[in-house]
Structures are given as C-alpha cells and as structure tokens.
Image (tube, rainbow, N blue to C red):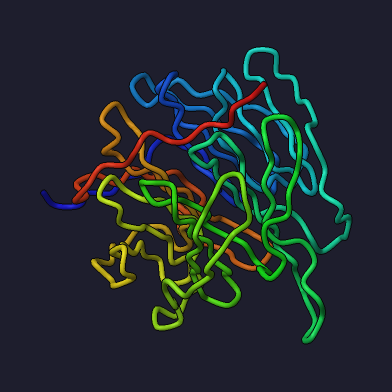
Length: 293
C-alpha cells in the first residue's frame, strides 16, 4: 500500500504538538503549545472542540477518564473535558525563565514522564531541569538531569526500554526502564546529524519500530529496534513536529506542524495544520494512560 498524506480540517497552530489518541472516546487530542490551545477532534464525524490552557503548554497524555494529564511550564495538571477545570497536581523545583516542559508520554504502569527544554543555554552552563516522572499519587521524581532539550519519550512494546531524544544534541538515547526505579544503561540509539535535523516527537509501532519526526528535514523516520534506518517519509509540512497512531484500528498516523514558533516559521498555506498519514507498514499500539486517582 502506498503512503498517502493529507491535511485534516482547517486548524492552524503556531506550534502544533503532542498529539495523543483517546481510545475510549475515539478522539484525537493535541495542543498549540504557544497559544495554550487544547484541541479535541472526533475524526469519524469531524466534530472539533477547542479548550484553553495556560501557555506555554509542554505536552498532554490521556487519563483513564475523560481528561488529559498536562505538562505546563513547570507544573503538572489534570484537565477535565466535561467541566473544563484545570487541577494542578505537582510542580518541579525549577522556576527559570528559560526552562519549561517540552514533551511527555505515559509509561505502561500509568505514570507520566515529561522532559524540559533549557533554552539559550550558554556554553558550559549547567543544564537545569531534565526528565521527570509524575506518579498517580502526585509524587514527582527526577529521572535525568543531563537532557537539555527533551523530546519524543516513548517505550518499547514490552515497556522495558525508554527512548528519549535530546534535540539540540541531535541524539536519541535508549535506557533500561523500570516504572518503580531509576533509569539504567543509557546508550546511543540513533544519531540524527546525518539527516541535518534534530529529532522531535516520537512513537513506537506494533512491530516495535521507532518513528520520529525530523523537523528541519521535513521527514518522518522509522528505525528498527537495533537503531538501523528502515525508511524515510517526506511530508508536506515545512516543519512537522510530533505524531501518534490512532483510529479504530490504530493504523492512522496523525502529524502536527509549525506555522511560527520561537525559532522556525513556515510560509506554506498548510503549515501549522494537522495531517493524516495512511498506508504505513504497521499499525500503532493502544496508548498508555495516566492512572488518575
């Protein structure tokens, strides 16, 4: 089957990010990180809801309820779709104008992992922030402090490997992962410098292959579990950002993009839009949810 890509709807985000599929509602959620917009789309009907969050927003992930867990600038929150209420769950001990949450994902045990970006870091300056894990009871643990621009956290199908990118370093790392313990055995998974782009959002498909967005190259890349490149897919967005599988059979790949972020600006009419990618070699997996108490 040939890969087909088309734009869905007419939304135009400044910085579209963090698409995540709600399997119970059969809805797609994503954010405009800079505008503080949370979108909720039912692809089967085209129904669309717009919700507001405090900007900037780093990431969202589905809860085991009609809600999402949210990484805000330096705090975690739960947003309820029905009541439109935002409840702060915890904060991290970093309050710096150049540090904020950037991307996140839930692990198979129901924890939410989110990493920060330390912008405009001077040479030799210590990295502030890193990777944090929010437990359903509100406890927060710092798992890493050596990631300056965290992106694309996701897990192998057995949940025992965590993938995490440092976009400024153009590097994707792999770790041994235990939802109750620290990270271990940090190792290089993929170096994306050969593609002239840092990696952005990421996901893992049902075959265990790792997908990432190469934002500056305008491509998606699929890597085997051993880190070898399986394929590249050109996309119509000038600067794509993040992706997730969804749909009733989890065989649709949804892709967000940039119209104007702090560093990049797309001038094509479809930049900032949401895209649907079909005809890929594998479907996705049911997304992990935050185990809200």
